[in-house]
Length: 252
Image (cartoon, rainbow, N blue to C red; front, side, top):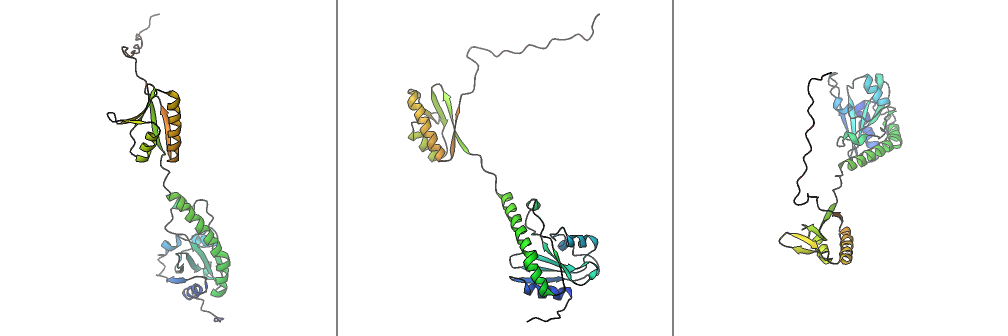
C-alpha cells in the first residue's frame, strides 16, 4: 500500500515513478544550477513533436529527471509549463542510431501526468511505453538495414571465342577449375588458360551448357564473349581528312 500523499517534488516524484514502472528502472535527478540551462544535452534527445516539444521550445529547463530502464530505454521528466501541478513525461531517442534511421518513424509523443506517481505510472505503462517501444523497434530495424553492406558483384567466368575454341583464363577457385575440367576444358599450361576444343561443335555446345549449369550451382555466372576486333593484316587504319581551311576574308 502506498502513501496517499506522496512528495510532489520532481526528484522525489521521479524516484517513486521509477519503482512503479514495469521492468527495472533507475532515476537520475538533474538539479537546477542557477538558471544556466545546462540540460540542453538532455533536452536535445527528447523524442517528441507534441506537447513536450512545445513546452521545451517556450522555456528553458532548469531541472529535470531521467528514468532509465535496464535495456537502455530512457524517459525524460520535467515540470509542466508555468510549474503547475503535474509533470511532462517524454521518450528520449536512442543516441546510437544514425539520423537516417529516424526517417519516416512517428515520434512517440509524450504525455502530461498528475503529480501522483502511481497514476502516472499507469498512464505511462498503457500509453507512452507501447508507442515508445514500437517507434524504437522501427528505428532499430532501419538502422540495421542501413548497416547491411551492399551485395557483392556476382562472380563470372568469361568464355572467349578463339577461332572455333573457347578460352577461359585460369580461375583462382579450385571448384571452378573442377567444373571446367569435368566438362571438357583442358589446361593450356603455356598460356595458363583453359581451352574447350571446337572440333565437335555439338559436343562443345553440350559441354558449355553442362559447365554453365554446374557453375550456376556454385553461384558463378557465365559470359560468352567474342574476341576484340582487330584490323585485318596488311591494312592500315584510314586517317580522317583534315577539315578544309576557310579564308578569313571573303570576296564579293
